Image 1 (spheres, rainbow, N blue to C red):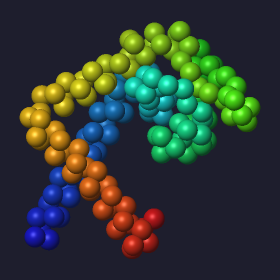
Image 2 (image 1 turned 30 degrees about the vertical axis):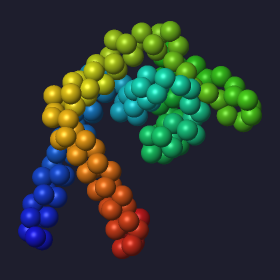
Image 3 (image 1 turned 30 degrees about the horizontal axis):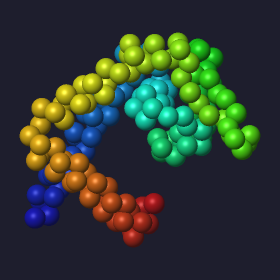
Image 4 (image 1 turned 180 degrees about the vertical axis):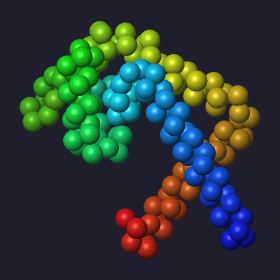
Amino acid sequence: MERDAKRMLLEYNKETKRLDDLYRCAAKQCGISECAFWILYTLRAEERQFTQAEICEFLIEPKQTVHSALKKLEAEGYLARTSSADLRSKHVALTEKGEQFARTWIDRVPEAETAALGAMPEEECAAFVRGLHLFCRLLEEGFRENGAI
């Protein structure tokens, strides 16, 4: 069993790296950083406004990384920041230029993701998502127990 687990872990890690590379290539194709890509992707997919802090939490990215990406996207005219109700934070929203950019470049990714999931048998798709949730939860518990995080 241990040998099987090790082999599966190696396969899992290889495929995770391959998946990371696919998204890295998608960001590069758009001509933007990975963080900028994920910000635009999230704003399109979630169809709501986020504060900078919410983006950091949602993407699990450091504040400075998100701040730098937001500044660049704002300077390029893709995003606007507007005051929120509490005045201590600003909401981030796509501008018309950002919407056009996202329609042209970003939307291709969820279209391909949806097609890939749609091509999988329904039971395999559900098992894939359930298995990933379970693996992440158990791995986080293991990391916390052994001091890795």
